[in-house]
Length: 215
Image (tube, rainbow, N blue to C red; front, side, top):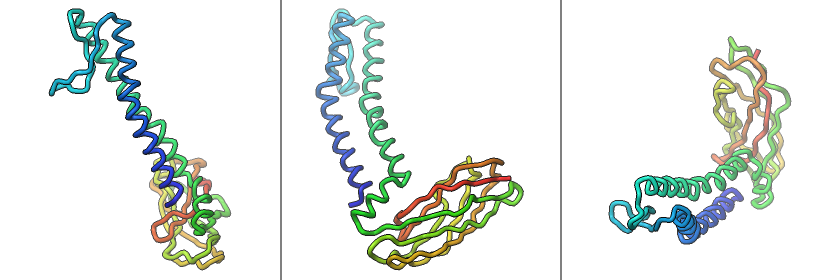
């Protein structure tokens, strides 16, 4: 398994462990503390229509206090489930998407590559096409097949820059130049950060940052 897959499995285990603890301890504790603060009895409903929600029961079930308990319960649910999921998985996705785990994966699997770009990519806003010269090198222990270099990502900030090279194989320790033509749709004038990637057999092996200059 790749480091990205291992990281995903670990985060899922941590998240589900948290979910169990949250519903068993954290949420009931918060709602009971709220009930004591409002001086009302707060219990989890077992009714078919609203099972699992907390509400005010008993003689002190005033409309204002019942509404406050319902709102707090909803906020606690959102923060404890979706909020924690965002805190765990969004940073992990950003790290994986950045390519930071690719060198670790290469050391573990023995399959890796390096991608370099020599110059900034320049194009005019009227003719939004440019040739990009890249340098690729197989740093692993086996041949990489059906490789393609291309733009990584699709963003309005770069005028939806896109383009990819022809497919090629990369023998062990082989280093070769690769060219591709990139295009954009009404790219905004200025300097923009873009990224290129190397994929072999639909598996990403390397990424490199570059500069797009639109004149």
